[in-house]
Structure formats: C-alpha cells, structure tokens
Amino acid sequence: MTELDQRPDRPVSVAMLTLGCARNEVDSEELAGRLAADGFTLVDDADAADTVVVNTCGFVEQAKKDSVDAILEAADLKHTGKAQAVVAVGCMAERYGAELAASLPEADAVLGFDDYDDIAGRLRSILAGETHHAHTPQDRRKLLPLSPIEREAPAVAPRQRLDGGPWAPLKLASGCDRRCTFCAIPSFRGSFVSRRPTDVVAEARWLAEQGVREVFLVSENTTSYGKDLGDLRLLESLLPELAAIDGIERVRVSYLQPAETRPGLITAIAGTDGVAPYFDLSFQHASPTVLRRMRRFGDPDSFLGLLDQVRALAPTAGVRSNVIVGFPGETEDDFTTLCDFLEAARLDVTGVFGYSDEDGTEAAGFTDKHDEDEVLARVAHASALVEELTSQRAEERLGEEVVVLVEGYDPDTGLPEGRAAHQGPEVDGLTRLDRDDLAVGALVTAVVTAAEGADLIATPQGETR
Image 1: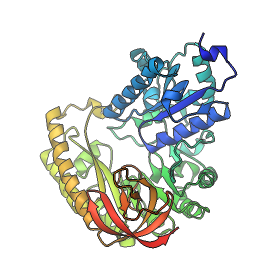
Image 2: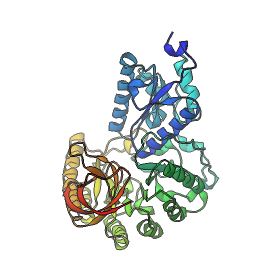
Image 3: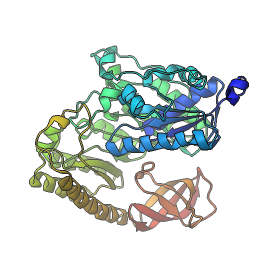
Image 4: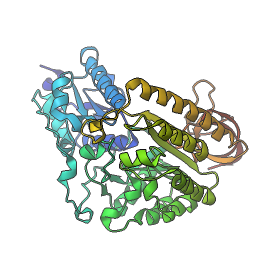
C-alpha cells in the first residue's frame, strides 16, 4: 500500500506546473484555489508533491513539445521523488484528450476543462488508483448559443496565488469568435465569453489585497470584451474603475485586434491615469492578400494610421506585435511588404513565427505551402530585421523618463530590475536600475541611460512609491 493509502487523513500535496500564456497562469491559480479549498496543500517544488499537475499549452508545435517534455520530466519524479501521480490539464489536454492519454501513458490522467469544477475529486480518485477515461475532444464553440447575448460566463473559482510577485494576470474573457485560418484556439477554448465587470473588479480588489500593484488584463481577444454583454465599449468604462482600486498602480491591456481597435479604446488606454499606454496589437502580417487568406483585415496604411493615432495621444507608448512568415501563398512581394511595414512601424517588440500546420485549421488544407527550408529562411531574415529594429527603438528611449515596477534582482549584478510602462510581462524586455536599495513592488521614477537590445538601464530620480 502507498503512504497515502495508509494515512488517508494526511493532507495531499500538489504542485502546479504551468506552460504557455498568462491565461494559463490564471487557470492554474483557479485550479489551485479549488484544490486548496478542498484540503490539498499547494507546494512550489514538484519534488515535494504527491501529485504534479501540468497545465499544458496546445497553441503551436513547440509549445506542445514543451508540454510533453514537462509531463515526462514530472513522471520521472514517480521514480526519484515522492510523486505518486502526474496529471495533464490545460489546452493540449483539452485539445487531444483520449489521443494524448493513449500516446503518453506516463501521465496518470488527462483531464479536460469540464473536469475543472471537481478537480479535487478527480485527483483523489486518481491517487486512489481509479482509472480516469480521458474525454473525446469536441468543438467547444458548439457548446454555447450562437447568439453572443445569450451566453453566460461560467463560474470562476477563487484563486490561490502561485507567484507572489507584484503583478498578476486578470482574465477578462475566455474563448474567441474569430475564424483565423491558422488558429485552432477557438475550437478548444470555445466561443468568446466576457466576464461581468463586477466580477473583474472584485478579483482586481482581491489581487490588490495580495500585494499586486499591476494587473494584466488577458483574453483571446480583448477588443471583443463586452460584445456578448450588449456593450462593445464596456472596456472603456471598466479601465478607470480598475485603475481607481486602492493598491493597483498600473492596469495593462493585452491582445488587441488591430481591425477592431476603436478610437475610444485607444483614448481610454492612452489617456486614463493608472492605465499603461501599452498596445499589444496582433498584426500577424501586413500584406492585405496574406491577411485575407488568414481571414484577417488590414494593410500597411491602415496599420500605420492606427499607430499614428496611438502616438498622437501617447508619444512614448509601448507597442508590441506578433507576425507569421511563410504563410501558404505568401509571395516574395508579400514578405517584402511585411518587412517594409516593420521598418516603418517602430514597434518595441515583435515576435516572429514561422507558419506550420495546426490540426483542424483551414490553412492546414491549403495547397500552396512553402517548404520548411523556405519558411526557416524567412523566419531568420525577419528575426534579424526585428532584432535590429528593436534595438533601435530601445535606443530612441535614451533620456526618457520611465516609471519602473521593481520585480526582482539581477542575479549577476545584484541590481533591481523590473518593467516600465511600455514593457509587458515576460516578453518585452526589462529595465535594470542602477541603485541597489529598492524593494520588490516599488514603483520608481527613473531616466533611461542605456539600452541593450530590448532591455533598458535607468537611473532612479528619487521618486519611489
């Protein structure tokens, strides 16, 4: 018999391992909240856990590989640590279900989103040796009424913070109603469902009580927030309310669809005290021909016009984006159009992704695909261009006054580092401060003195809060 069988009243420990985006981080904290409320003990170290829950990412091929590697690494702990069960949850688990369970027997169970409500019961049954039969995936867009106004957001579990840092993601909505030909997310995340503003505000207040100073609003498409509640301009009224919460010093918005970004929303983000002038604009490409094949909209002129609107209101605003190169049918002229746009756009950070087929997407059936070598060559060219443009944009900030949220210390120099308003969490670079007496969570006014790629070095000016 196992130790757990012999001592059924002993608290069961569980470690959450999270891969992928900030939305997954929120999901992990909601799962942790359910488990803690049901008597489980949350631990940081997987080596010390009875159960390891791996919250997987199923977005692109590399993310899926990373998720599988994390599951296999956790499974090794059943031989070298105290772990008795490894459970896969998250997007990859939902997307592949029984197929993933069959191909990855190292995982003791693969749980889908419908298992989340009773995650504690599921883990206890798995630890007791019961066999869990993984679900057969279905298109989750069909689980909600077609009419957005008839949709109702599912209940959200109380969160248990897994990272005590001074910023936290805050979920605005889940799912997506767009039909981009390259993206499978709507099929496993479902249709777009907004959370009610009262729930968002209440969770933001709770985060402030936990010491959070910056909330990062996340969803699959933030520009759609409120459309299923009957008010597409709901975010514009929500932002000032969030920024006014005692303890919250900065509100940051993520993932805006350029074709849906309204002048009123630009004004709200750029002009509301306490809201970071930060625009995470998902351009994906600039050639109108390629964008139409992606089922997206835009062209260089409209995108540059959007950036002009942003910078007219907030000249030092941060702007980041992602682009896909090597999309089926992308010509040399299309690729040149994209590169020319990137040079003109002066973005702070751009993620470059090479196209690859995703199961169940329309683009996977396109016939005019580039071979892998050509895709890789275009990735290399665009990445080198973006690296140079990112460095140039950072150097343009020399002498600029920034407000930095201190998040930790550089292990090599011992100096504090964090993010200015134009830098989003984890992907947009850091600002290092050349003074060593600053506490984590402090907001420090500083002047930029140097740049290293996307990273900045700044000298504090004495104002700290």
